Length: 142
Image (cartoon, rainbow, N blue to C red; front, side, top):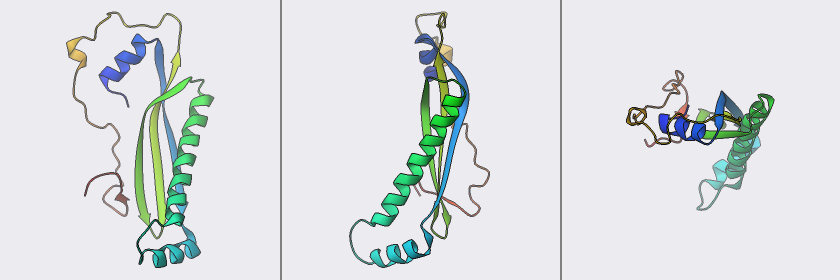
């Protein structure tokens, strides 16, 4: 899920992309947490239960990516994009997508400069077919 420029720079540095890695974490606030946060929403200030839920879901999604990358023998994960969805009824999904890369000897670009053909604007390669049905994408302007 890298742009041409990102791919060229990685290879120029000696890193080879191995695979796309995915981390998904779905969290529920639960009945009691939902009631507590509903009451707290009437007053001004942070709703700690929701903040904690979102941080935990994010950390779990990143941990899933790290495990997937480690299992494939990668050194790093680059280009991580995070998608956050509210699935309804206090359920939130975090989905992280990144590229697992490994530094390999002898890997480099043929040219020391990026060729003009590689500078192409691309669109997001992730297409969510479930979007627009029951969930709300939280990281896009409305």
